[in-house]
Image (tube, rainbow, N blue to C red):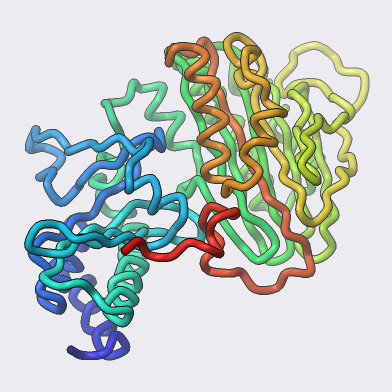
Length: 410
């Protein structure tokens, strides 16, 4: 068997020659050839975070064939995603191996294969490395095909939902040396236009959570104007207050109604955090095991047509290494969300990666509503490691409590 170092260039060349929709199958065929695998599957995590779809058995988007959708809760697939560690077990005449397909904390899916014999450490490492390559392949080829977007969806979206999903960042999770973060949106029956966004620059982390008034298409259109204005201002180098001003002006000029929102920027070198609150619920901070609201000055929502008493204010937020910060929309606090003790749940999930914590929090609100939410429930969960961190630990995309002790299951 050739070493991974000599195999990787050949594999990448084969992927580049293939059609975007066939890129994952090229990797599957490579694994069959190198390790005599008799079954290779790519399973992609759907938008809800509650299931995976086996794309290798799904055919094409226009074939009418249903994707095999497997619930995650309590499954070994959930375990692999949570711990970010390979799993292996005897399976009839062969040996089953499941490895995570993840990039910078974004749990894209899983690679599952059946090998003729139990893999040694070298083989397991090569399969895991191939899965990491697959993560990049999915990200790169997602620009050219709808296959991966199709696989992530449990049902065809409404027009409002299609608009709303396109406003979310391409990756719901992100990690760097100084932080880990993840956002999650649990949509209501009529969709309320909630969005979250982030961007990482050389010196700065930008975060935002927004919530337009109303439901359905009007909320989605207002969210489009709002997110477009915020991204445009941010990408032009505008400061936090100017970003808020441009969003406010855009809503007044181009959309009906108003929206609440929260904008934050964190200096990655100093840890200094600033916040603009436009009529939005206060954030929560988990520090040393205790979760509390962060009191802050509340300015006017974006898009009000009536005169306001004062301009937007950028205020300091006390952020220390080890803190977990939760930005959220009112759907997490009102209606059925009021039945959930959010601070206690935040404390109870402190050992989970932000990806799993965000999903647990929104899932609790959805369960309280019997899966029929009256308002979108949206959170963005940030773990601040501190400016003293200079290099990301590549295994940190896992359950923070169990990652150091987790090992492949034998």
